Image 1 (cartoon, rainbow, N blue to C red):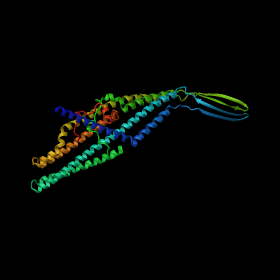
Image 2 (spheres, helix red, strand yellow):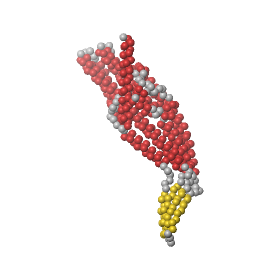
Image 3 (cartoon, helix red, strand yellow):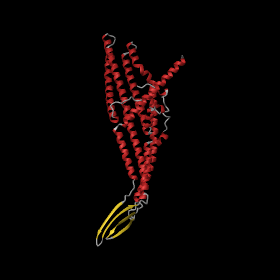
Image 4 (cartoon, one colour):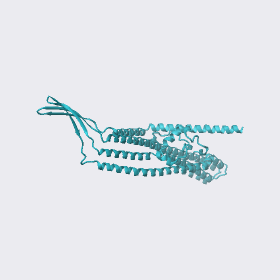
Length: 424
């Protein structure tokens, strides 16, 4: 019989974990669809397409053929038609193609970064909206509980069980909670407006995943390993490569290209043909200053790349450490306050009704319970925002959403018992 109970408990836990994964997956799919439908996503796609077109323009041939038509009326009338073409002997076109390839890669990275920033901003708005709604619910619950208390106090005061002081304390507590309620309502309104701006909805279509999912799902993260995936580092590396290709183009641009032409026609009653050849002589404008400036630009980009690498690694380490600290504080709040908070309100009211707790102590306990619940809301919000910041810095947000959309593909599915806890 004991074995059957253990088996049943394990099966129930598996079903709950699968349901939690389905909820998280539905939320991730909803968010990705919502982001894809945003006008800002369309603007990002249009900007990427414009940058691609500009990169293709860099790769186009430099010179087009020219059509030449001549007419001369003298002793003999001369009519000619010809074609001339400047030859890219110095390889400027090939340098332009390589420059265009690097520019196209940069356009893709910029687009990926813009989409990730849009997702992180929208996710932050969802987190703040959820926290503001929880805060408002806690304030309203406190107001309702104090309202019921005042009705009980009035009846007990009329029957002589309570004095005037207890009634006054209840009124003062209800008046004091109005400030918290007003601030919570204002914060909820502001969060709703922000969500409308960022995600074009007044309320999320799905609830946020449980706090258990706001963590690494595929092993312990490593800032050094995630550095290479950073959008800013990839942009800095691309800018260095772009500067190098531009310098190569400017070096080849110092060499002049000849123009070859062929013409045919008639002079009087005689046929004629001719060849034209021209070559610019770089006697005055040699292109040396432009090439030197391009080389200096390469060195500048190289130095900026090293600075960016150091700054990003420091930022990644700081973001991960901040998340770990906030997650630990949230876990400790769950362990310390989660279970007592779940049934403390009914227990306190029952003890007060039985006369084992004074009205003053009861009101103080209710205030402490509200503060504890709001502390849990704030800790959870800070933990979730820190997690999003880490994902944004490490270019892992899209991967995390994919794992939520298909939870069984993540190494951390289902969430272990160590991560389970009470959500305030």
